[in-house]
Amino acid sequence: MEYLKKKHYTLEAAGYRSRFGEIDLIVKDRKFLVFVEVKLRKSGTFAQALEYVDKRKQERLRTTAAIYLSQNPTKLQPRFDVIEIYAPNGVQTQDPKICHLEDAFE
Image 1: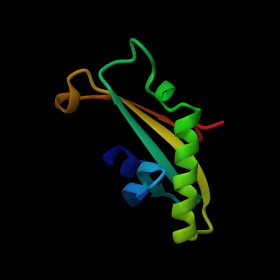
Image 2: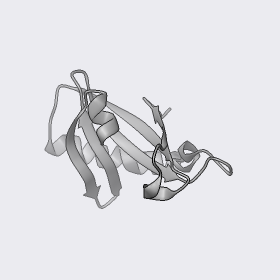
Image 3: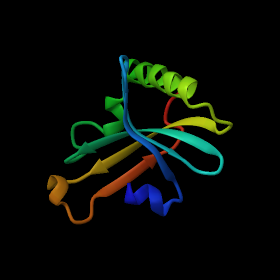
């Protein structure tokens, strides 16, 4: 979350759940309400973290976001981002590589 705070996002919700799925983070800035899927991996050797957010997962995230928006109306433009965190030593990693993919869904 520190990474997003430095980019001037404010937290709206964390771990928002519906019967269709969970959204890791919901943050906002002046223009967007961003639904963020966070993927933590030790490395990108086998596949990039984004590859784990397949069409089925995207659909569940969209449905859950629609439920959130029906309960929390906003004038902000919704957007779906994926944040990939590569941490070879897990949470003990001193300087993890963070890749923020804005508007990540097709």
